[in-house]
Image (cartoon, rainbow, N blue to C red):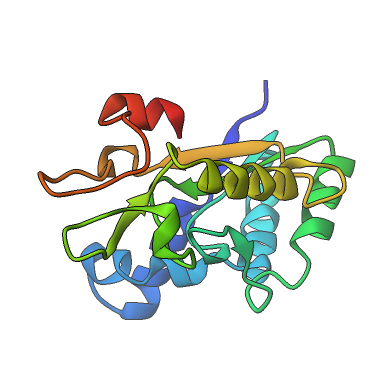
Length: 179
């Protein structure tokens, strides 16, 4: 059996060290540490300790926008190539996915509050479902990034509110299931 390595802890440790403070000082900055260069270093440090994870989770925030899950090419100049190299080593790569986040998506694809402001993606909306299917295909297909799957996080942030509007009838856990 080979361990799973999730980069979040290493990102937090790096952010905390660079902040020169306690863990809470680093937590707010840790997403900035999800870079190809750092993940290469993390894997090198693990290998030096004879730890060779079979699955690697690239954590928050490898993507430029959460809603479109488009790789941040400044942080990850070659995410597809990086994933392919892990596959060549016999490893799997999971990408961290922030459920419900609409960053980068138009409000029409989202659950909205009474003012029309997007508060989360709307998986009951056929237009969003189509968009999401394309995004997922781009992340896991051989023609796309070739990732092996996702670590889905923030599922508890299901959009709610008495005046929230959505396309379909699904709500709460049913909406999460749809997502």
